[in-house]
Image (cartoon, one colour):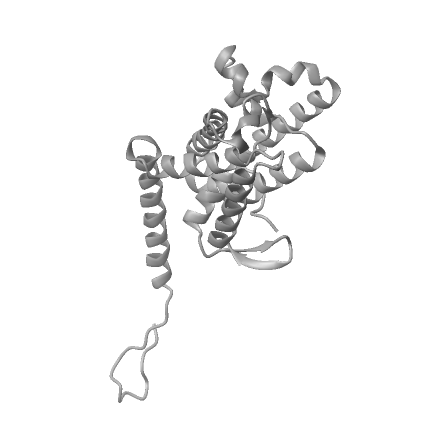
Length: 238
């Protein structure tokens, strides 16, 4: 289960989230200014909130599932990209998710009216960005959906994105579904944009392909080939 030992940035993020969860549990008043509230960002200029809300969680299950997903999908991405690029991507997806929540709160539609003064917390937006990246790099990898059904990652992300889209349109849930969609959108744009992440992504891909080519080249040295004439009884094997 999972990708193995925790990588440095994933480990630091998990520790930071757990520490903030404990602090919030003991003294919620200290962390209230860190929650993302669209009205406060726009009127009181609390511009740090689209960043700080990523480290707050509302319940033990909230932080448990987010950190478990961060470990399961983030570790392999950090190993592949390197810690620096992984950190950039994580916060681009997370902050992008927060900004999406703010923009959605300004839309003149019924389901979004309540978002303007509603607090948003959690790393789910960044986590959804990681899910998208994982599906783009390893689309046919299989995971256990709800721990029961095997499903390819690309279909899993489509299902989760579809659920968030329908839930956001319905507006009945207290979950920040627009932030989930924003994390997916921000992550995709970052990976595809040559001026942002795409160029670094190409470099990482070239490095990966080069290492894979070297491995295959070394492997061929140990392959077994038949030699000599086909009618030779003592054909050489090398």
